[in-house]
Image (cartoon, rainbow, N blue to C red):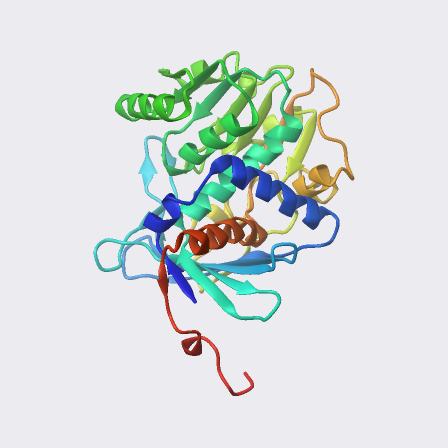
Length: 358
């Protein structure tokens, strides 16, 4: 059994390959040849005021790659107000101020545990790559200007994925903190060989954009109705970033999945967790939009429903829920590359198998 760290994985991640692999996994999911098991969260009280222990699991199986994946997180989460809105923030409480999240890969051929690795880099990469897959099908082929709201962890993968599926003449990036947007623009302009410029407002980032991406941890909307224009494609990394008014104005809405996050809170917590109002566990648009009738990304990739049909359409990939299947797809790449390059630590399989019937 192989153990990998984020430091190992950083040398193995290639965004164009990740986009292609996620696309293949979505296609198999759309034709019924892959399986996703929806996310479940357990929430209990924590000793820190306003914080909870969140125990999250999600999984999926991709037979084409021979991989099943289980992703789990053991997090201390709170919701501080930053500016005028609450943000979802994880507190690094483990020794050395570190976080706890991992992915386990199993063989669909033998059932054996093949690999375990930190979920951090894989997490942002699978979100970015999925947005890239959606943009490949929903954004105009001639999209040349990208607007990006956010300069954090998720925004890094979003800009890489968008640049993997479209050739941009200009990327405009906004963060409320000037130093953050300037640093981000300089770093990714060098890395991607693209004209990336920091801008002073979200409206400026959205102005003239063919694709508009919000990649923040905001619990309140970041994409405003006045940002929309014909032919634009929009997406986000959190459901709370796109308000109902925007969802009602788009011409073609696609979601990552219909399956809800199942939250299991200890007594008293729903009233204190903002995400039961606008976040992972509920949103104001539930019940006002018939999401069960909205196409999923897997349907678009499998060509069972149409992608963009007109240059004038406003399209939206509402990426408000993740898939465990995404980790099976990304994990298959990571595991194969690590084995080929001899990275990671190998532990005897006998520690993870047994002679008695479980």
